[in-house]
Amino acid sequence: MRNESNNFLNRSIVISILFFFISFSLISQERDNGTPLLLNNYFAVEQIHIQLDESIKTTQNKSKFPLLIGHTQIVNIQPDENDPWLELDSIQKKIWRIHLKFDSKNKHVLYFNQFNPGESGRLYAFDNERKQIIGGFTKQSKTNASEFAFETMNASDILLQFETNLQSNDYQILLSEIGFIDSENLKTGFGSSGSCEVNVNCTEGDPWKYIKQGVTRILVKNGSSLFYCTGTLINNALRDQTPYLFTARHCGDGASESDYNQWIFDFNYEGEFCPDPDAEPVPQTIVGASLKASGPTYTGTDFKLLLLNQAVPADFQPFFNGWTLDSQITQSGFGIHHPQGDIKKISTFTEFPISCDYDADNENTAGNYWRVKWAETENGHGVTEPGSSGSPMFNANGRLVGALTGGRSDCTALEDVDYYGKFSKSWKDNGNSLNLQLQPWLDPENSGISQIEGIGINDSLLVADFEADFAEINIGQRINFESLTFGRVNNYNWFFEGADNNTSTETNPQSISYSSYGSYDVKLIVSNAITSDTIEKKDYIQVKPFLYPNPTNGNVTISFGTEIPEDLEIQVIDLAGRIISTIQNTSGTKISLYIDPLENGLYLLNLHTSSTDKNFKLLIIK
Image 1 (cartoon, one colour):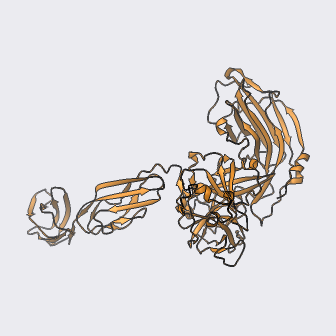
Image 2 (cartoon, rainbow, N blue to C red):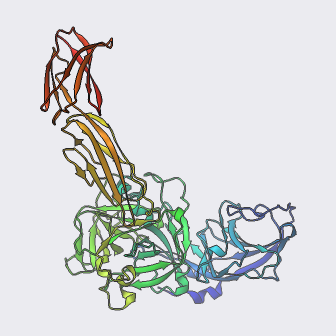
Image 3 (tube, helix red, strand yellow):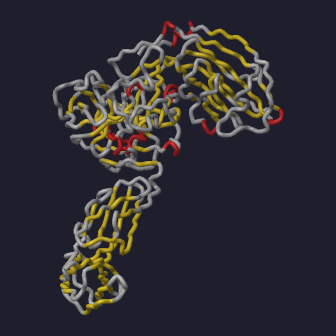
């Protein structure tokens, strides 16, 4: 990739001072919920005009991955004690504000070479119309790195505001680069992917609601170049939710440590429903990572393992996806990705992927790649596009088996193929160094684990529960069970006392039947990689005897399917509540009765033991 840093020296920055003399009233206290002080008030503010350097205008090669979307220009902007500050004596605060104006309608990203707001500082960015407010970033926002970045802003002018205590000087804030995402000339970001793509919240994604929560769009910074890629959070053998992220090496191949600290990871950037949304969803963003391991592109498996600089917040509902080292592949599976940097999509394959070398049509069982051909599904024909680079491929069991390097598929080439570096080969086949293998990081205790389920942030909380569509049934009647369990479940184990099919591992067992009269327990054990929970409902299913024929001319058979209780008493009762007859001391598994002389009509047949009392409606027609 071309290094364009020398061209930045030719940028044109025109600085002017613009003063607004509009009165404002002081507020009594600092606002919470991330609201800047004096958000809607204007005061003396320095205005900096930044012109896009046309000599480094972004061009995009559509046939190559990853997706080049823009570049950065160098600036040197920081709050200084010699600058004009607005002092709010009544609340012991001071405010520094700068107004950045751009000559294009590009989206912009603020990159900081130094970010330390001090003990009391808060840093914000907002557009001139106050439609987008980012911040406030405080000392809690700071990572171990000195670098930082703000998420993408859709504005041609941005106000940067820093607030701190009146006497504070323990801050270091340096805006060092401004990223220009060339949305004017390039088809990138929201709404830009091909029309054949399938949104992840269509029915194709319904079985993978947890898995999608691990997939993130990545705004890659590599020197002065900006790219979109895709990656996923990944589980490790310790199951300790270490924020490892798996993607492709060619995403930012050659990025510096400083670059990685300014990578931006957008979680949950997706439409809420199957149709494309009218408005762009708000991503949930964290910043910064460090490189732990990678495998060579093309000659190796083109993987990259990052460690995020901070834990993913719980309210993002992150999911650390599972994986397998199995060298075999299932016939079906799927990929989740951000084509063109658009909202999250899902692509499905239904033919066995072929083991091969990169961009090779011949089969090679020892090859480093899976060659995948995508299938048409209910809501489209998902493929991949620039921006999908590094995205995870999953087998039919929802386990990670590869990361996307490249290929030829798109919405105009539905039958073409893509290539995913094999996860099983990335484990330790790229070389002997720790920085060439996944194993030292994902299995640090060398347990020998060969596969693992995914895990969610709330997987330590698991509460089992269930219900049946009917709890009182006749002999032979089929009923369905539904799990009402709260939490992430990997395994279900059902036990149906007395049932014809008395165990199940299904999520929601169907067509469970009972052939014998009685009261039966139902037990459900649910588990994930961290914990398990059990619920047992005593005498939950009440199985009544089978009464036939009904209506009857007076001849009635009652089948219990088991030995009749010794203390059973049967009474025939008319609608006036009068006991017509009583039968006792029965034996065997069936009782045959002749009820006579009764008139035509509706009667109750009461079956009573020391533990049960059941009534049946009996219609007599002679």
